[in-house]
Image (cartoon, rainbow, N blue to C red):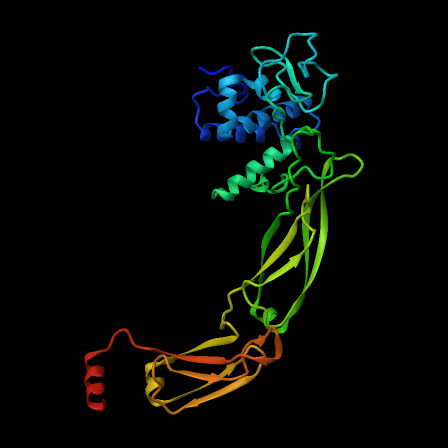
Length: 365
């Protein structure tokens, strides 16, 4: 038997529930009642606080064990039950005149007392709840760390919803902790990565790019979350490789520790003629079997518009290559140097031969 079921009731669970049950219930109810989805709703804001505080205790095995054995009042006080009224104890169940940061069970089954910790009892300083926004943010980070990378704000609420890993920036942080419990360290600003695909010509020549992004910020006057457009400009250096990062500091969504950093990851669009390998550019020339055996001529144009005249007397071996130094991609750190331009010869064999053709080939070869 547990001492009480108030926290379980908040999440709609039984005391026999598992940790996974607690996480699922909290995620569902926190998303439903999150302030950013229920602007101006006092009831939803209060419900969001209640489910977050219930989750903070029940998701922690040690806290849950103490709660199951002794109840919430014992935890908040940090010791035995409160003294009788008038005995001078520091634990109160007062209403609006008490200290901020208590757990309000108003409207819940079993009573409506608001428990608030005011000073340490015989058992030492009592437990105090964290900021509900911080609890939710920690929950999201924990989901990402366990492989649930899709459980970001953007993925949970959809594009155009509130941003990922929101940290309640731009608004005063409620005093949910007491002096007996040190405040949590301000979370580090998160980094968002986005792809930036470029053509091979853009990566060869270098280019200047402009990009429009949308970011979430808090209005300094109203404290409400708003969407803002921002234009980013960047110079792409010649020779930049796939996977390179272009970093912007403090241009993303607003968080508790500041504003998100944005990293653009360079990608390469497919080219109809060339492929890139490091600083080298590869091009394939297709040859008919007759050409490969008897000789052929071609003109190949490089990525910078130079023409290479090819004149082979034959035979040309399938898969053979010609390497032209200093006609490939420029080196990003040494733009006056270039990689190689490599031509590979692909011999196209016929799929069928007539009996007469076979006989003549036997005579010739």
